[in-house]
Image (cartoon, rainbow, N blue to C red; front, side, top):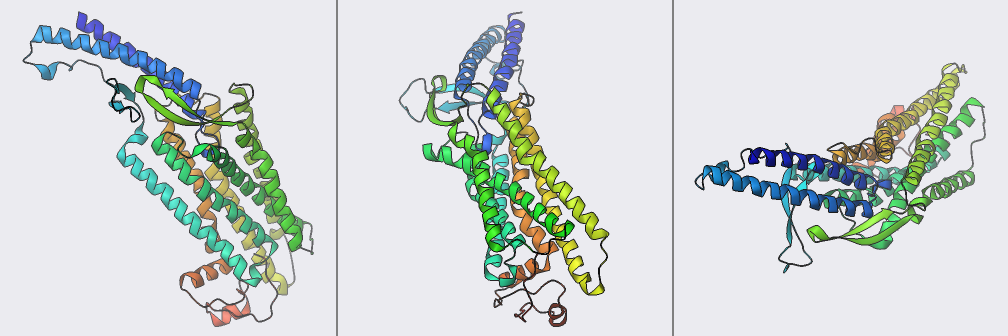
Length: 446
């Protein structure tokens, strides 16, 4: 009878622990803005106190069960002592050792673990995924910028905007992914106070620049094709627009650098001292975080994609119904192919980022924090979003012969000409070679 009572008590402990784990997930959710986890230190400390009570109660119950079982079964059956103790699938018990005080007699405390990202196989998979994204993003986007700088006829307005997009993706690959991976594996901010303010800001800045650049590309092509603006933007004007995109993106990302703090927190029960990089909103509530998340969803995703979609639909209708002399067919065909490529870049961006934006807003609204594998789901959605940083160069190489020819020449270490000839040009069709020299033709827009 006592054994049943204690088992029931331990089951209640398990239920209480589940509430505590949900609270910890909320603390983790409130620490992940801008791809760097937003750690709510107060919430975490309260959760740690609750965890201490639960662990103490459960361990006392387990001790009573053992004693009652040993009294009834005798000391000769130790293997059966815990046979009736309830255990939830996938939950482990491990021991925290205080690295700051090795002489403490109370340096080991039992803590329930409910985090699949701590499994070695999962960590290896995450390291592999992030490493591949970083390598592919660095190589692909660097190569895009290199080609636009080296080849004269690649220095067009559209290509300047594409280079700006590649630069923003490079910032994500260097300032986002390594830090996100480190946090996921360590669950602690290890990079100091300055980086606590700079990293989230740089990460949000790069994403804003990306979507603003995609919007500018769509509007520029809309202006030229739909309204027959024969005069393209000048190089000076394009650089001014690029500067304005960075300035506007800097304003939108500003709150992540301003409303932030770096501090150390003591979790006394497990003798753990952790470095915390957390958001600190003016009113001290989650309301400001929800407002910011919703605003970013609209300004960073819904509104830009609406404008881009409208622009490309109008462009496609215009090109589809356009009738031109036969000597202009090549130019119209090239514009159609380029429009397809740029529209596909936008589609990939939208598909990659949609799950992450929705999950982030749902987290601020406390709609998904009860998920057992919240951290793993968030990390997977983040990986999907980050895939957009290396897909653009792949799309350029697949759908545009200028980029494809330049990529091949680079990897084959072929002598670099001054220009890459336009797709479908007579010289390209005749020579069928990789080395194409300048024959006086004007620069071609991608």
